Length: 526
Image 1 (tube, rainbow, N blue to C red):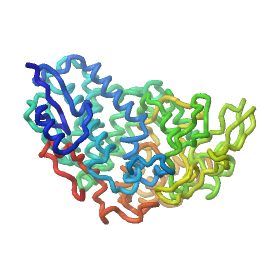
Image 2 (tube, one colour):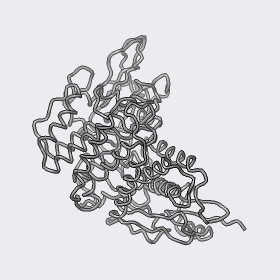
Image 3 (cartoon, rainbow, N blue to C red):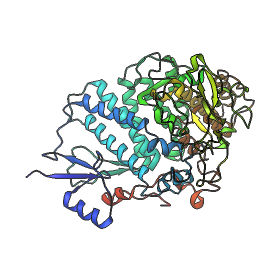
């Protein structure tokens, strides 16, 4: 008789037991790769087609990058960069967005569960390729599998501090073991070290940066080692110097800082030398999740979704007028501008880049036209919110790093770039007490950004702000704030940390995972 087993939270349980558990706990579990596996036998004999499985693994990374929820929300909405306020009944969603921003998320939060399932499933799929029973993979495919496993494991380690791990050959009755944060760290470092040895050098000017090269793995390894004190409790003797050396190696491969800030993010291909890794994901959600319903484009006549916004405290970190971000006011380049000028044939349709504040515009017959909201009032985005609920259509500035100026649903999302690596090297220098050369590094970057004067001094607080100015909405803010000890610092709508401590630096283990794998232990404070 054909046996059907279910995988849930990283463990296999009989179908009959699953039915009992689901009935008793009223869990609404849907079929997904991380819950279900089907087949004639539970015996693992290797992956028949590693190339096809790798394509699936990397396509999943692409799919995650084009979504505004789940991974993106956990890295950004939990910070001072993004907030999703409820506007009337819009964006209420049973508080799923609000609890992320104020750190009151719990073990049943749907987006936390989604990322847990996706990442742990990907780790298993990568491990199946790496397993010795798979003998048909090439050295390159093995290196790509090790990079992908390290990337997915790193997110689990960073988010939850523990890593359920299943050997593909384990029988269905074997519960996944659980690796500690330090054990997971060591495995990630080893996978990336192995990957660097066998990945191609690649080209910084390549039009295809969707698969890893040596510099991609070096970038992630530098990121892991820069956070070593978070993961291991303290920096090792060589961790910070390793960060510097890894970034030097990336630079030696031809990657470098570039000017024209918003051009860096103009896909679908990224031939500029700043972009190290990109995916062919649609950037549309990152454009339209915050723009107003009446901000339309020929590719999207229905307009935006009027949700995602940013806080005044993020805007105020930039050089420029505090109450306006119209084009031509001398603000620093990275803050962007609200487009109020027609370009050739009016093709910009009123969209600018960066922080959208004040009157919004469209274009008609090549001339700027002031837009209105749904009640006919001027469409003027404000800096302030009345609260997380009770908002109107215009409360809160909107962010456009990927702008409809370049097309309403442009493809291509940047995953890693040299501007980040350059600042990681500067931070490593700073943490080693090399303040003067670190300041030179930071000012070298700032010199490429128009209207961005050099810094006179450098401290950890200034470095965190600089990373925020350069890298906003690129998925690093939560990671940065935790490393600098500021993730639970007061911010708008969160005057103090939930529970008065830093326990929310780790997300809660989903309750369904705890239910099916008793080797897991809930993180403190939940």
